[in-house]
Length: 326
Ligand code: ADP
Ligand code: TRP
Image 1 (cartoon, helix red, strand yellow):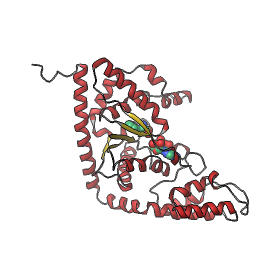
Image 2 (cartoon, rainbow, N blue to C red):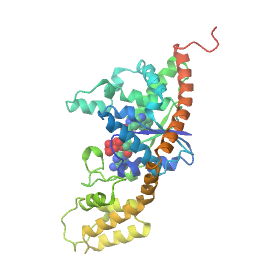
Image 3 (cartoon, rainbow, N blue to C red):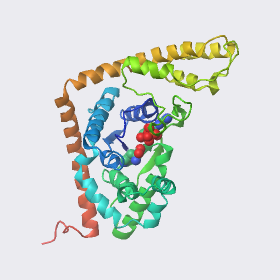
Image 4 (cartoon, helix red, strand yellow):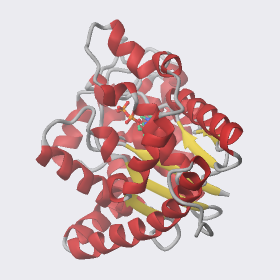
């Protein structure tokens, strides 16, 4: 199966991104052919500062490699390095009913909040469809919020195929595990839009400080507590060993502990967990040419596939001469 997914470089990766998406991409790369890209064209709809976007794109590449995305197994590239995707976007746009895009939530939500959307945000799902269709992807691992966009992609591919003949492979959404819905420092879902994130690659001191500031309830220390309903425990569970999790749960049920103690244990566990990735990242940062080579090789591989698909599609819809025409 060819597995493909993109992640936007709109902020530094947080624990939610790691456990909810990146870790699962990394697991998939061993058994499947993986195409993973940094969606900088999509990020253009939110990041309007050139240097910031460039920096975040670079950081995303270093982060993904450091966290275990293996360029020997999967193809890692930057979205904009494959111009065929933008060409394909236009072709798909000509088969996209306005109504289909008007129903898409990213646009609908902005409009409901009175924010004027640009055409980039409105046509965002078409670019996303081109991302997927350009590589004949079979499976697209995404979070629940992106499932609607995969449906749009399937609709566009189906109607193109119906009209012009079978040019596109129909992709399927693979829902990323919900078990890893990571809570943020306020107990709500961790998200950069809620400013409640804990970054994967944060220096130890500020990282620990943020952990120590995680909001907790004000029940007395003696009172036994239910670990399952506590977001601090849910965070600890991401990192602790089976035994450590069990011991922590027992401590909750018995009561007589302070949240400060749990936070210290969480900070230690998280630091130990990400230490190897942090070392790898520091190593990669010292060798930017190696990272550039990896991205270049990834883009080359991705372009080869995208060019083949684009050729197929252009022939199907009559904007390039059939190969054997005189
Ligand atoms: P954010 O909500 O911070 O803007 P994104 O929407 O860019 O994050 O998410 C990128 C990926 O990370 C998506 O696949 C999403 O499902 C996953 N993800 C983000 N936050 C969480 C979370 N708190 N728990 C689990 N997965 C998450
Ligand atoms: N829109 C996705 C998100 O915000 C990122 C993305 C862009 C993507 N193109 C994609 C995901 C293609 C899967 C397939 O998370």
